[in-house]
Structures are given as structure tokens and as C-alpha cells.
Length: 205
Image (cartoon, rainbow, N blue to C red; front, side, top):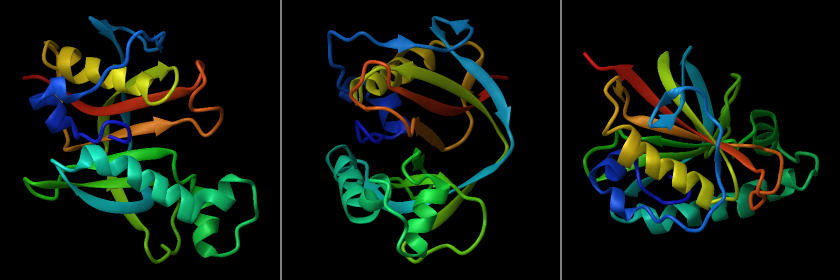
């Protein structure tokens, strides 16, 4: 979502809307699978904390990248530059790793969804302007990719929703949300930058 402003439901319905940049040298570093390699694992429920905004399905493509720019410039710039936190909000940004996740939550109705720029929530006071969301215990299909942003994660997302899910005889979407994980280290434009897409799945009956 961070890079193409579309939720999983949108991508499944309109896979052609995702832009793929070619040529690319992208390593999909995942284990096992059919057609597309993947790793499936069970994970206990976990909580994330961060900045949340609602987006309309039609407007998200153009607005979500601006949301990241806004939060990075207004909230995270000093912490990311290595400066000591000046207040409770900046301490949470640092200690929880805000920016580690891009979280899409499709529970806001048929015309919009919730999106969070988030990190891991460890408990404690939630600063004004932030929110907490809890994922239940789920089975996740985790897709790792290596390559420059946004092209690498776009290409993996395209394969997941236009090829892997529609043609998969074993797994289907289990929960109205997904997670994009971004490495906190490295240059996002570097050829060896690592990211992941986490899709909640269940076995087909």
C-alpha cells in the first residue's frame, strides 16, 4: 500500500492498476511454494502503534505516498537523523520503530480503509495523535523481496495478488488487512534493500 496506494481487495479486483517498472533485477527470497515461492508461519497476536489515516479507495494511490512524506518530515525526521527524543512522542517513535510497517486495515466500510505508518507496540501510554491496532493470532504468508523501493515491493505485490492467490489451490485470504515490512537499515534505493509483504491466509476447505 505504501507504494501503490491500493488495498489487497483493490489489487485482487483490478490487478492491472499496479504499476510494474521494468527491467528490474529483484530477488524474491522466500521458501517453498507453488509457482511463487513463499513461507507460511503461524504467529501469535501482536499490536502495532503509529499514525493512522483513512483513505478512499479511489484516492489512495495518490495520497498514501504523501502521507508517508508528511509523517517523515513532521514527526520522524529528527529521530531518524539520530537526535535524542525531545518528548514522549519522539521516544515512542524511536522505541517502537515507527516506520517499520505499513499496515492496511479494511474495516472502514465499502468506500474507504484505514492505513497506519506503524511500529511494534510494547505497552504504555499512547501519545496524542497515535493509535494502537491489534492483530489476532493468524497464519501469515510472508514474501521477502530484495531490491530498490518502490519497484521491488510493487513487483512482489503484483505477483501475489495477480498470480499467487488466484491460482493457489491451498491458501486464501483470511483477514481484512495486510502488512508491509521495511528494513530499518540500508538505503531504500539500494539493490540489496530488504522488505517483506505479509498476507494473512487460511487453508481452503
